Amino acid sequence: MISTSIKQELRSIVGEEWFLETPEDLATYSYDAFLQEYTPDGVVIPETADQISRVMQIANRERINIIPRGAGTNICGSSVARKGGIIMAFHRMNRILEIDPESMCAVVQPGVVNADLQKEVEKYRLMYPPDPASMFVCTLGGNVALNAGGPRGVKYGVTRDYLLGLDVVLPNGVIIRTGGKTLKNVSGYDLTRLICGSEGTLGIITEITVRLVPLPSAKATLQAVFSDVDDAAKTVSSIIASGIVPATLELIDRVVLNVIRDYGGAEFSPEAEALLLIEVDGQSSALEAQGKSIEKFCKERGAIQVDRATSAEEAEKLWQARRTAFGAVASLRPNCIVEDATVPVKRLPEMIRKIVELADKYALKIGVLAHAGDGNLHPLIMTDLQDKKEIGRVDKALDDMYEAAISMGGTLSGEHGIGIAKDRFISKEFSPSAIEIMRGIKRVFDPNNILNPGSFL
Ligand SMILES: Cc1cc2nc3c(=O)[nH]c(=O)nc-3n(C[C@H](O)[C@H](O)[C@H](O)COP(=O)(O)OP(=O)(O)OC[C@H]3O[C@@H](n4cnc5c(N)ncnc54)[C@H](O)[C@@H]3O)c2cc1C
Image (cartoon, rainbow, N blue to C red; front, top):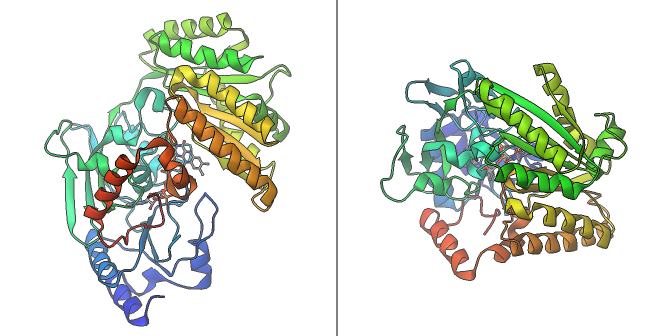
């Protein structure tokens, strides 16, 4: 519990109306997209780095937990007050501070929504590549703290690859700057990249400088339908091994295709066992040849249908299935657990087979959606969190799934983070010594363990 006098101190820093504590407000901030409920003791909404610094000094003095929160769309439970404390939200800090086309960078506050930045930089014929599917809602602060990726990751990488610098308030209130606007910077330890992906456990990000790239002048979109998921997965490895680097290479398996079809999202051949959605971008002259090669690879590997968009409208139609997928699976059962197992690309067929085997073994409905081009699978477990027996089987399936991914040289998370969701698996990926180094880093930044202590580690 936080005393009335401390609440008053916080209100005097951020403004009377920006400390929330009504039951309705607390309920709103009790969840993120991982859907486990933890009621916070209050919600503070600062407007400046200086206010954040003063709030953190009080929190550090009084040992009050602070949990940073962007739009709350993370699916690993890393923005809830698992161990009590105050949520810190950033929707007052939502300004794009600068777009600098000559230095190919932009400076933003943490509450800027990803798609808003994309739209603004496109006016300068520039692109900010990280494109999480939640881009119309999620914030840059959340993207940096979770090192978010997206469908374009296969060619363009993830958030960390575009970070040039950060302004960060440490748990004791001290403000530091890491990196800057230069495209090259090898001075000292790379704190920018360390804080990226730290899940709000090391510092509060108050300003973000990102690198921009030229907006590709054209793109080609193809969709290939396969009657065998193994053929589709092997086609992914063939395309990558051929030297073509698609901007997007997504795979949808039969389970998800059927759900999309029943939902009215798109039509497919009854024989469809898997679908690949492939996009290449760049100069239009090169795209024609790349499109033809991809079509050939798909057909050689047994695709029963390949469609190539000839207009922006047709391309949008080919994206329809992928865009409907989350909504469709969410409508089937009360809950859908979105997993994030990631393996080296050539192990993709094996990992998909493993997931099908686990669905069978534990009598679960599991579909697969994958950013297949970079080996990032999203097994979708359609379930009911209230059904304790079924959740027991889900837990066992997850245990086996992550064991398998790690044994194939993979990782627990390609883009969604660890959080509450995967904390218990962390020793599968890291040795005790590696975990102790991470704990040591946390102690250096946050000796009193007040910043998001309920998240991983
Ligand atoms: C439908 C759907 C699709 C999705 N698709 C993708 C996808 O394609 N790729 C992908 O990577 N993710 C995806 N996600 C997950 C999620 O959208 C991303 O992880 C996103 O980066 C979270 O941003 P947010 O603003 O919602 O942050 P939140 O969920 O609020 O917070 C995420 C983390 O960031 C920390 N944080 C937030 N702001 C700050 C700050 N200023 N300083 C320090 N720490 C901070 C929080 O403490 C927390 O640990 C998807 C989620 C949904 C629901």
